[in-house]
Amino acid sequence: DAGVTQSPTHLIKTRGQQVTLRCSPKSGHDTVSWYQQALGQGPQFIFQYYEEEERQRGNFPDRFSGHQFPNYSSELNVNALLLGDSALYLCASIRQGALRTDTQYFGPGTRLTVL
Amino acid sequence: GDSVTQMEGPVTLSEEAFLTINCTYTATGYPSLFWYVQYPGEGLQLLLKATKADDKGSNKGFEATYRKETTSFHLEKGSVQVSDSAVYFCAHLYNFNKFYFGSGTKLNVKP
Image (cartoon, rainbow over all chains, first blue to last red):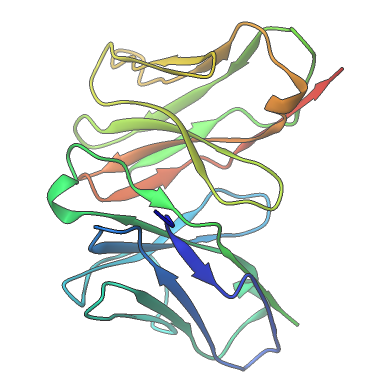
């Protein structure tokens, strides 16, 4: 079982550009959440996808958008990048029916640097 | 609103010393509580969890007890090792869906 995988591992962009990060959930999981972890801080919830729809959203601007595909994988898109978007972006997955009994599994993250 | 507060680091200990990392939370209802560990350059790994008041989570010698009366979930280990050096995050799970994390506590263990 491959667990949660994310790509790419590292990414460097310049201000104003757009970026797409990808996440494949653990086998059997259908719900994907995205978190932003700035340097020296704890992760902050961006949003969650289930059944290809955004179900919950944290306090992030509309520049942050996402998508979930029929195979449950997910993308995080960030437009008009700012220096402050530099962070580790973490993906977590779980099976919706096991929300009360199981624990979300985190991927290794994508390190985004905005210059 | 919901939040998690944990002691600031870094915490520097000698090998075999006793570890305590304090964590308190503010939450609606009675959330599940977690400790995650992050090694350099890696993602988050679940260390332990507790789902209801007075539950004790334990793993790899680490323990934490869910204290509803003090809204706390302090992490303890009786004898730390160099390999325990990492950043530790306390978190609570809102509505079974969304994590609130503390800002992390870096632990350095010296031989």
